[in-house]
Length: 221
Ligand SMILES: Cc1cc2nc3c(=O)[nH]c(=O)nc-3n(C[C@H](O)[C@H](O)[C@H](O)COP(=O)(O)O)c2cc1C
Image (tube, rainbow, N blue to C red; front, top):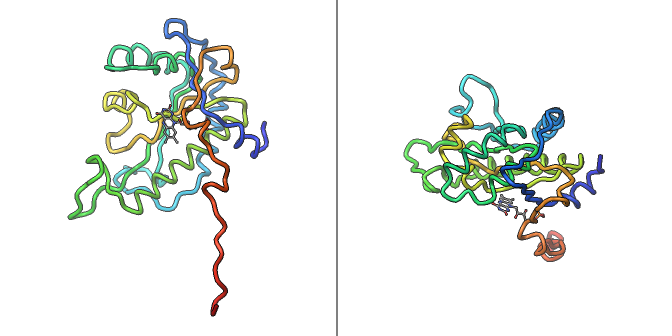
């Protein structure tokens, strides 16, 4: 297991791809590790409970939800995406390589009386919604780091076709939830297969380019 600083530094986007007709073998033993990652993600900070409308009969207050597809579910998804997506892109190739796909959603507060949804018809740009998104993103990053520490590789994707209403329906994701990311989990031996990195990786700056020390004049000065 990598120490936390090493996991932070070595985490990187790996978009591993194999031919959809010749998918990687699945490993049912990974389920325990995946459950561990998900449980760790749940330690992320969150400020406010999700709206009651998302809770149903449960008392689950977290503003995120995780929908987990193991490797064999990923393989079953390949023909569905290939047939239904207008532009499946590389998704079938990644589904053929993945150890898991985790669809992470966040739960927007519904508009209050008199408020109209203004962003994409889905949610208001309120402070509460901003904090729900931030909390769900913290949960995703925690998951990525926990995976990296265990020698797995990851890809946080916006989802493409995986965020469509049809995919929500198939996976049993309520339409009121909003996809924050489709998280692919890949093995560590990706170097022997086709893979591509994240586009922004080489554009990172040193911290002093985006962080600065603030000085505050002593009171009375
Ligand atoms: C919210 C979010 C959505 C992302 N969506 C995509 C995506 O749809 N396609 C993609 O190639 N990379 C996506 N990425 C991954 C970035 O490309 C990647 O993090 C970036 O290039 C930096 O590379 P690194 O993760 O290796 O440091 C996403 C990252 C975040 C945080």
